[in-house]
Image (cartoon, rainbow over all chains, first blue to last red; front, side, top):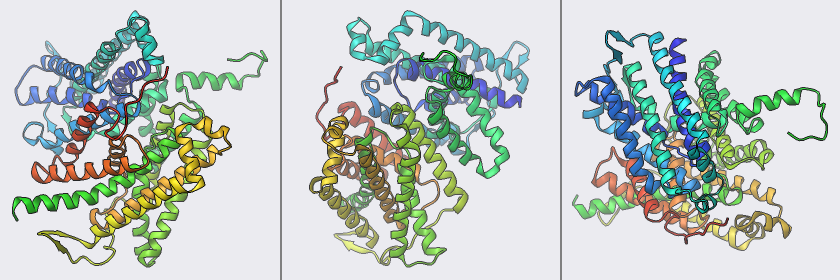
Length: 293
Length: 294
């Protein structure tokens, strides 16, 4: 169970990171698993093959991924709507194939094992419970950072871009640069989550960073509630715990999962953060008639 | 085999995979144009086409042609049921929510297929034997000709429908402007229904004609669907020749790249081409730039 809660923590960081881009700036990415994977693989390769310290590897992984996203952001974020979706999706698949094909470096489809745990002085984060605290420390930091960012001048500028890029530009927001910056920040946070994943699991393989996981991340953000940091946590928690609960259905779990996804989107279009209170409100007898919520 | 013969061989096989991508891409574009939805379940209709044909041939023991007709019919039924149950009740939902619903549907359909038919890979018999035909040094299979011929036929029917029938013209009107179309008396809901029917039928045809060459299993829909989406994007989301050319361009370049550079990177090459095209011409190669309305 503790193991699952570690995953909830990692997925929370990822969902929060993607929400900054998708929920606040309104830019879709169907390739975020690639940044997660880059973080994990850079950290993994640097520690396993080159024997670097875990923390230093994590730092390099985050910075390098952030810089890559920043450079890539300029051409990619010029695109809009489904063209942007397709471009990020394509990027994700390319990275996934590179993980699989560069066997000498990454171990290919059979994965990379023996990644060292993180540690401070004599304390090594080598058990689920220790990793739980470690991962959640990072998750809370990223939630705190994102909440602050969302409430700042930058957060307001991002929401302006979401509503109308032209209007935002008219108000003096440097739309192009800001979109790229938030893309890079989002990628950087995802890479940190990737490093944490690599160092807590000590084994990584390309299968964890494919198109399906990118889609799952987008689903977490939308099921949780677009543009709500706490919503991202709820979405990440739900979608991570759900498969564990659905184990009871055995082979039918994927069917139930798909069905739940459809039903939740149909009946809670605003996500859990807005949907659950909405359903609770509608259950109460209506006292204030004629007033719309 | 010398280089030029190899190149001809790659182009020929690229043309056939390209035709498959075109058909799948057309399905994407038709639904997108009538509803504004990217239907991520499109690949599952491709899978259903192949798997259902396999099922009808081996389990029910129907002759090939009858099996194919049943497979198309059932895939189309799945498509319109999906539209009725999940898309129609939500016409006011945001595009992102609709995308999630199509993703949910694709997981659901894939899960059902896995439950019914298992995880094994199956192959369909070739439509007419497998004696290779030699064309100027390159070999092609009769199945390649079937794929090219059927794709051509579907494209011609598609063209005739969209330009020379009342309901086809009404669907084009919807794709230009849905509210204007409904003002002149076009039943937009019905057009959306039609678009799902046509797209799922087209997807299943693509799956059926490709299955004898590429094998089929419950999860073939993902990559084929994405390639079809690529084709539609390169073609600028047109439900006509743009997407067809996009698909063929993608198929040929991918096949050349896989043959001459590296087969392990075959899928990566397709997406690198896509990224390059998007970076240079963000609106697809076959479409004029749009100005944003505020």
